[in-house]
Structures are given as C-alpha cells and as structure tokens.
Image (tube, rainbow, N blue to C red; front, side, top):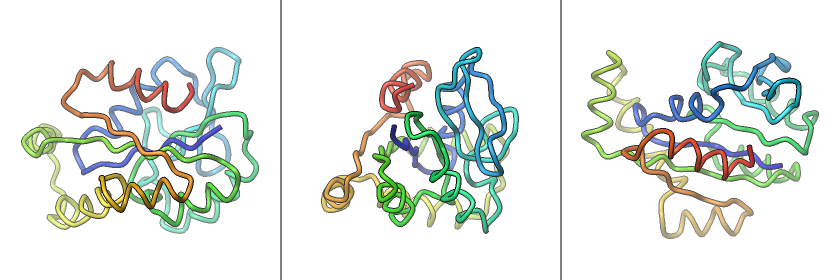
Length: 182
C-alpha cells in the first residue's frame, strides 16, 4: 500500500485531521518511529511519529530518525497503508526514497486560509518562532501546489490531493481515509 503524507502550514490542522482519521483504532508501538494501527485485532496500517496517545506527527521524532524511518519502511508490511504528517519528513527526498522502496506516495496538501490558521494558532496558545509560521509553510506549499511542482511530483510517481481545512473535520477525515485506503 501507499504512504499518505499530509503537508500544510503550521496550525492548519494536520495533526487534528490525522487524529480524527485514526480515531477508534488501537495503536501498538512498532519500532522506534511508528505505531501499528488495529481495528480490534486486525492490522489496518501504520502511522509515522512518536508513540503518544494522540497523533504526534513526525516532528516529534528525533532529528536523526531518518535512517530509522527508512529501516521501518523496508521492514513494514507492504500490504498496509502508512500515514504521516509534519515537516521533518515532508520532503521530495523522503518521498522519492519511499517510492524507490516500491510504495506509492500520496501527498495531501491541507489548504488553510490565513485567517483560519491565525485563529487556530491563537486558540492553542502557539508561541512559535516567526520563522516556523512564515518560512516553513512556504517550503511545504512548494510540495503540493499547482504548476511545475505538481508536475514534478506526478512525473516522479507521486499523487497529489487537496483538502480544504475550512470544511467539516469529519468530511476531511472520510476523504483522507479513502485516499489512504484505510
């Protein structure tokens, strides 16, 4: 199955979307960089990130976790989908290496209007460095915007999707489940 990776600006709801998407599934730590997801006793997929009770995303992994993630991907069940989000692994290099392992890659860009992003950041009391909320989002938009970038991703075996953050969360989660094959 594929890797489905959600990118978007800080505060757009990536972690909330993945937490809602995996709600009701049991989690069992699978190595140092992922959790296995189960529906009762049946394995249904994996989520990359740190083993916390709520979806932590890849940003919670140590900076040197890249090799561990690649090792996990090589040893994981290829029939099960993998979910991920966060800036640490949301790179063309990572997506290319996942594809080279034989896993299709779905890049999901969570589109968030600026007023909604600012409201969410205020509501969670975010005291992020200005660079985190201005420079980093530009890097992530590069991965999933129209034009040459989408063409680049598609030519290299990746599929891009767009989900609007200002639509109802349950609808976003249903769409992400369909994209990921959960």
